[in-house]
Image 1: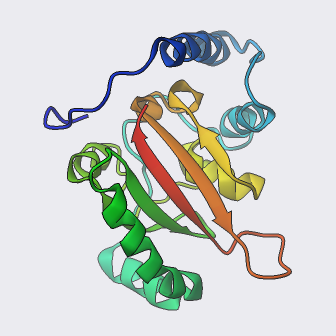
Image 2: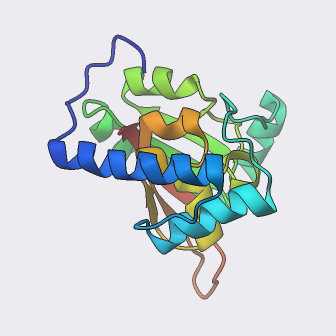
Length: 195
């Protein structure tokens, strides 16, 4: 987190929650101890990240990114993004003063837009939480957008519930967008801020 970002201090309940999850994460990463006391979607995601996708929990940045022309093409071809863009811009303006950012992802987990508090935009850029980056679980492990897309339901990922340690400075909540009558997400909106 950049030094210019002055965010509220976490409450003692959040600190306690974080310590419990920190211990579960460390036991799972170092010794393969089955996580206890975590939500079912987080446990499933940790299993996928480790066993199915082989995500390295020590990476420092999301590894897959689109070149600018491919990002522009994805934005143009995504009908949900085109419809949602004005709503996202208005909502992001409201978030500008509250230490959060609002991101839109396509159904494959590629971030198409990011707006909100400038200090948070700068902070998350350190881990490549930026337009053009892929945050699908296959690439980035457990995270709000990727896990919500995979689970096809809203998901909150709090601090050390992220599989990759570098993401644990942040908490995020992802909510998939569905076309009428379809069961797979057509896109996703995510709110991210300091844990």
